[in-house]
Length: 230
Image 1: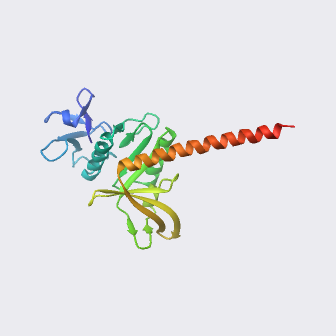
Image 2: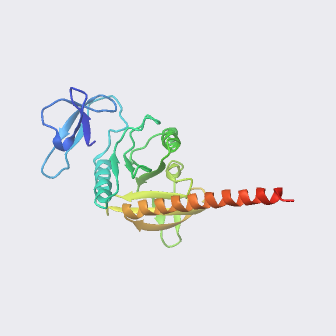
Image 3: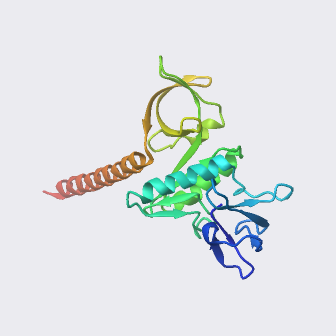
């Protein structure tokens, strides 16, 4: 994680933290250690032998991707909040972009109930929620995507988009799920994209949806108006 609380319960960014000082995880309140070296981005990590569970006890891959996304989008003048507290949902999502889009990275396995709850509470708070999971199996020759019951939970129900991150090649793939074939097989179109392209696509879809909604309201108003005419 990029920040932790000091003895005064103040949030301290890892890049500004001092080694050998005491820090605690802002989520589970357990002790964390500062990792600041020549090659690694400064960050806090939970102590390995700590038996308490924390959903923010993320892997190095998780941390690296979160930092990569934040750096790319900040460089393009997007507003990026890292692990902000959302009081309406009592959650700390990985990233909030431009005050409207939540990006959650999920490389470790959690319960489907947890995924559903986190999605719904953030959506109820007014955010568009997108999950990024590990690389999934895809047959490019016949456009067949293979998803377990667990992996299906990460499909966005509004536009049927699944996002996966290839940690080996450092690439983001979007899968537009078109049809369910049965078993674990789906027909899907795959395309590689940058995170900037992803955010742009989501924002364009939001504008289109708002315009469609406005058009339907106007059409209904005209319909009711003409019905009342003699």
